[in-house]
Image 1 (spheres, one colour):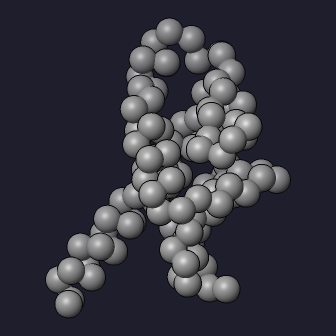
Image 2 (cartoon, one colour; image 1 turned 60 degrees about the vertical axis):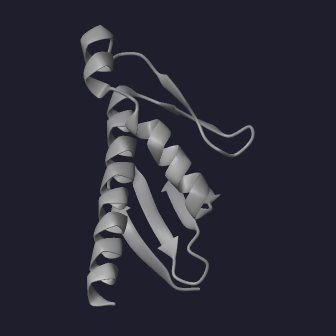
Image 3 (tube, one colour; image 1 turned 30 degrees about the vertical axis):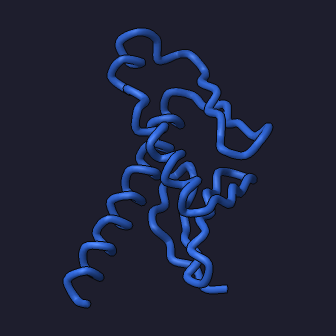
Length: 106
């Protein structure tokens, strides 16, 4: 099984399987495996979170981040939420770049 690392930071890693295009979100001791559609939908929801709004109200809170997998959620601090959004954002940027480059070369 061949995997491409899309992005890695101190919170975790997001990789994409080169065979089946599924995504793995690795956070601490947990691995979420998502289809391309699930990853896209999850990314959309994560991008709707406003860190500026949270920062202005209360950064000391813990946040429950519900995943597309039934019964699976993350409890994150503000800093961890920031890092999680970074994982998703950079991974999506890399995916978009790869799509653009593939279109130009075909």
